[in-house]
Image (cartoon, rainbow, N blue to C red; front, side, top):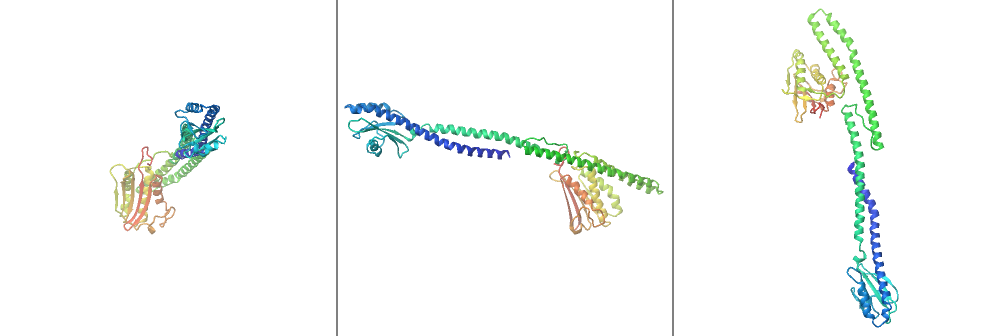
Length: 438
């Protein structure tokens, strides 16, 4: 934007200056020619006035030569006197002036200027009073003498033009800097809002249009903050309502006569209570918290959790994770929920005895990849079910939990059916300093 504004200003200023300076340069050239012609005419008239009485006497030649010599000099126009007998007194300019048509016309008593083919100009003034006829004073101006001083005037005009262009560019640069700065600050505010910082607000500055956008962006941020706050409170309230039936389950478990069965059900109820507490904490968690979890550790922990049930169903299991930490920009509870959903899908929707594996590996770009693969029949029609739909009587939300976990971390989610079974892969970006996805 700043560069475009500078180019536009330079082009506009150059066009305006061209429209003004071109006529001025032509005017200075014409003025220089008129001035040189006026000076030459005055010189010729003075010589003609001085020689008029002299040419009527006998010693005309010597006097004429002295007079003509006095008005000639270095860098001055050539002044000549053409006597009535065609004799030239003074420097001769080119061919014999007496043979030219302008001289013959001047002898009729007319004073005038005549432009030569070489770009110069002749000034001819008749001398009245000569005894043998009319003599003519001729002043020859070369092109250089005619337009002397024009180059200096043009250089001054060019300097003024360059100065005006530079001044215009300076003003445009200041204006562009202001506009670009205001736009970039507005963009940074939008980036902060997109990253979850709902406290970010734009400062209205710059032209009216940018101030209007800043005000609307602030209104949008405030509205989003209000909606998310209400959403988090609703989720927390909903989770809190689950405490009552969970407490009832705990009481029912304690009344069971079978001690082992009571302990097992009590443990399940305790796990359910922890899940409800996690939902409440997550709903009230500020959005700007920097999530981070060790994918390898979570994968090992959840695989170990589901291993007893897999053994009951005669399933072979495998877990392949690096020994070192594999950080991902996802909270540990969300990562565990995604893994539970994927492993639960395998246990619920594949025949008993179907083996599955959980694999974690670090990618070359610093990110991480989680794959849950089974040896079952794969997805129907080789595609994963859409959110809310299922061919096995479930809610169809299990895979969507894993999908959202990856996508909210700016990663990707992919499913694939192969002859060996189904594969679900979650890819996570690297964790930048501060815990946010890079």
